[in-house]
Amino acid sequence: MSRLSKCGGEYEQIIMTFGRRAELGQKLLLYMFSKPIANITQISKELKIAFNTADSLIQQFNQVGMVKEITGHSRNRLFVLWSYLDLFRS
Image (cartoon, rainbow, N blue to C red; front, top):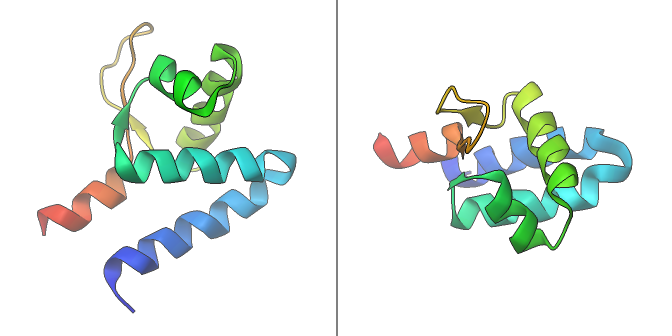
């Protein structure tokens, strides 16, 4: 199994624990595979969901360690799908 598919499988297992948000979580994961660095506004526009919904979903990704917030600010935060990006560095 390639490292890329292993990483994707691990992410999918985590998302399945999100309950009713699992489907939306999968959509966000697919978006972040194509754009691994994103902000909440981009996510809400791409997934066609409210800003607050996008914020709470990305916070859930952050809590389980799927993404990291890299700006350290409370506004205009950027989130990175870190493990996925690391696959391309090594």
